[in-house]
Amino acid sequence: MRAGIRRAAIAAGVITVLVVAGAVPRVRRAHALDMSAREDSLAGVRVTVAMAHRATASGDLALTGTVQALHETNVYARASGYVQRWTSDIGARVKSGQLLAVVETPDIDHQFDQAQADLMRARTAQTLARRNLDRWQRLERDSAVSAQEHQRPYDDATANVTAARANVGRYASLKGYANVQAPFAGVVTARNIDVGMLVAPATTPGTRGLFTIAQTDTVRVMVSVPQAQVAAITIGQQADIVLPDGGRTVKGVVMRTSSSLDAAARTLTVEVDAPNRDGALLPGMFGEVHFHIAGGTPPVRVPSGALVFRPEGTQVAMVGPDDIVHYVKVTLGRDYGADVEVLADVPDGARLILNPSDDVVEGLKVHVIGNVDSKDK
Image (cartoon, rainbow, N blue to C red; front, side):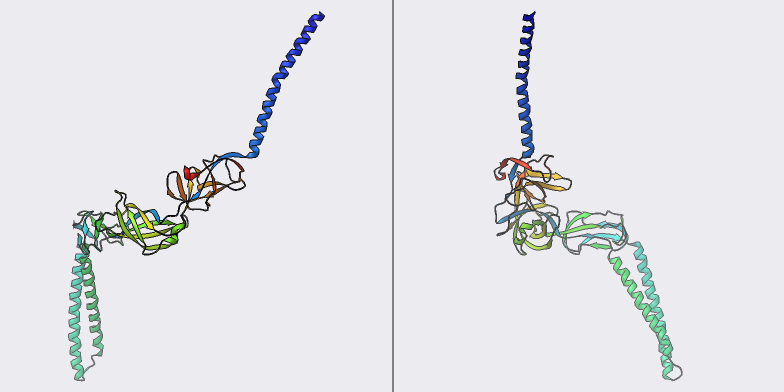
């Protein structure tokens, strides 16, 4: 019996040793994991950053511009009536004063006839008043009566003739407006009428133009120039407009600027005028405008992966010298694929977090584990 008790005690001791031997590694592993988690917590979120860099200074600034007609207007009817015929369709090149359409104006025709009748009646009354005045003036010379009181009827009749003549001239002008003419030489870009359509003057609510005419022998190209290059743009400066169809180049000149920057985009609107006698530049077309400049501060480029798109705007997560995250709102410039120009307070050499996660918030201390040179991407 003692031997059995001894064997049981030995077995219990062996089991205890085995349990302790197995528990010690698990405790050690748990302690190591806990220490690692504490180290990660103290070190902050691990991030990879890339450096912002300023573009190389260049004597050529290329920006996208939009072509507009030098002059463009809607041609309205000056008199109410019905379209009898039209002579120019879209795409037609017209000269200044060329007939575009003829409008029948029956109401104005009747009013013109009435005005002529009123003028004839006023002239008859004036003739009668003149005869009466002459007769009383002869009697006055004979000292029989005074003709002074008969001067006023004649003056009133003369004023009525003048007013009637002006009214006839007004309706004659309106009848002349029945012939719709081009205000300047250009191309018809829209025709909004057809035969039999009722048209009205522009003063009538809801009225739209009969035609739209654009003067395109010279066009203007509107360009938005970033603030960093504004000082390099001057009136009279030469610029090349590169068309998207095969890279054809048209010479242009800077004619005017808005003299004020857009508060949101920090850009200056610049107008470049270019000759367009062959019609290669169409209104609404875009082209790349190359300004030949000297000096100026080139913009900062950031890697595309550093951009954070949020409802409040596009931002980048910048890591300061103390490894604290600060979000900076940026305005995008030209897109080069891997890099994008930004118009904001992002200094050259700033560390920007690539593809920041939702855990990267404002004021967070992070641990930088990698640095990618964006210029080598």
